[in-house]
View 1 (cartoon, each protein chain N blue to C red):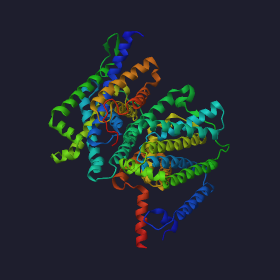
View 2: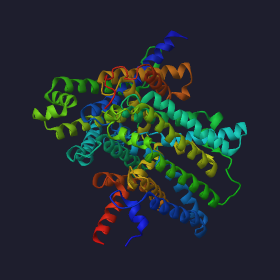
View 3: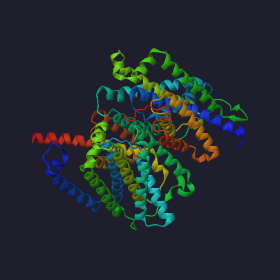
View 4: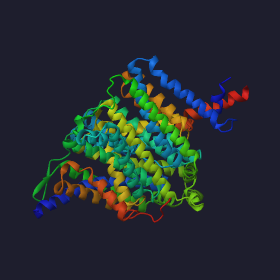
Length: 296
Length: 324
């Protein structure tokens, strides 16, 4: 196979992989702090897309998409914090038995709620915002400008996220809660506030992915479905609860999808990730960076 | 005063023998079997579909409610069973009942293989992997249109020659009754105690000698097989299979039925499936708002009364008996 073409596909895979990282980091971050999977992650992605679309078509105009992005992210994060306060907070306060079960059922109900609300409010149509930027010449072949913007946006956000988690007091608090909730509580950390912030940040990342990818994958009620699956695949591949695992897993998934599309068939692009997941579960069940503990 | 059979069927704290409970169930079953003769063909069709969901919800409750394993591929396994049976009947020319059996066996094997890969890990991995499995299966079925006709839908030979839904209703009633009775027997056996021990505390279960991985894998395979067989019968009743029926909304519907009815009860999923399916037909004119209402109801139930309709019924019966 032509080496320049191969490089091209590798690059395309890495670009899309960078955006998958946003979803995966959000899922694993919420899991680390709150010990629950947010199954409605894709719906927050979808909402991010809708907010972005509404902002640029109804208010800011297509030229000012860059201004709409942070607004969309903040809206989704605020919605996430509201959901956390109203529905998920009671699971820690009320000491329900089987917290993860409660969280699973509640967030799955949220997927149904948000998807169908989107249909009720906007109809089952696909909306497509204009491309954020003209195609970019990357090597011999052009790459869609919106994808490049999305990749750069994802890189900036992940950098910001890493900075907050590693260098600030908030990040220290988040990491301590992830390590030991009781210990963090004893050290005077307000757990309910940290949970709310963690959930807001986590779904904010998904909302950012949705807003960034709005022109690439379009905006419609079920747009979150595949992105959630990819997020989960990355989580299993990278190891549940590992941030580096999510990043490496994201790029790996992007690469496998891109190369699978050229080498095997493009129709099954969305299935290669599952193949990778099965392979990894068979060879290295804890994921690339997984915790050694096998039981909850 | 409520009938004796009811009072006894309602809760553990009350006097009652399993024979009374079984007699009550048999009477209910007989009444259900006669029901279609009092109704028109459309209501019978709705009830037939409700019985299909009774099978899905009950078998999912065995997994999630009794064993603590959240599979999110129940709808995909039902679809896979349906396609397996339909394609074998269409391409290999085998009889329909044999196709249904093959659908059940294939999904049992799929469940077993997926369980073998994921169940050594923490149980969340099963949920994550099954979700990925469900979406991937749907994508493959809609892309392999040469075989499955993709989104156009596959016309499936009918199970029975009859055009009226009445005989199908009886078939589904028998299948649903067999499923629920089978689960009741399973849960009363030593295996049932092992499963509940796994749910309550896997570490302790292992410490007292339960081979947790083996039983989790078994129960996942079993409930996958039930879903596959039910999906196969359903396909041969409706006469059309399409990947649209394998969307996640279907899975969410099953979860809503179980949660609304009451997890960890045998009657809960039956009640939940009937209520949700009938309500969703009655409110058909309102379109997607139905699903919004169901989702909000489940959120309210989880927030206020997590034991569902069966929990409410039990609490009411207890109060009633105390007052009497």
